[in-house]
Image (cartoon, rainbow, N blue to C red; front, side, top):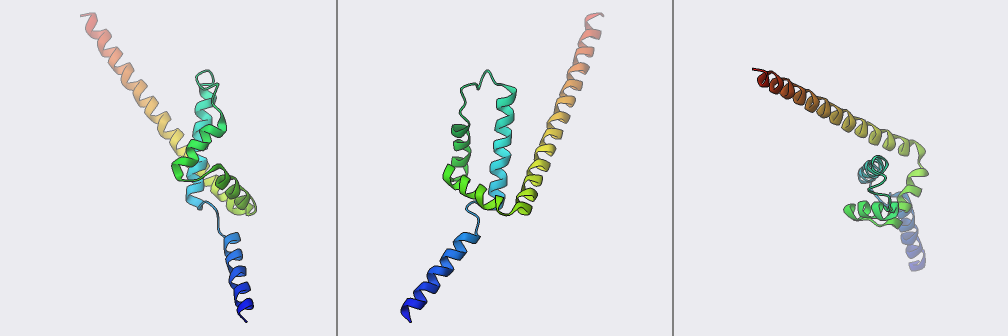
Length: 128
């Protein structure tokens, strides 16, 4: 009887550990957001970051959230076994990235407009 109870408890623990994500969904989406952002920086400035090793760069991201590369790889394996969930997660990350890009483009346009206005005001004052 004790052996059966022990086996049931071990089985329940095993099943529960297999069914839960190694890294929570929200955290995993934040990790992907950071990874895509770092990838874009590296793509935009390859000379400055030519020596950047993606694992060391990503390792810093994992450290930020309190996880290891092994935790991340385990989480990827977990989420890839749930393709619908993984696709929803990636869609949310993509939406967040697109919003960030739109905000940055708006800020850049506003800055350019302000600079043009300043240049125009300076030019008109210099001819007086």
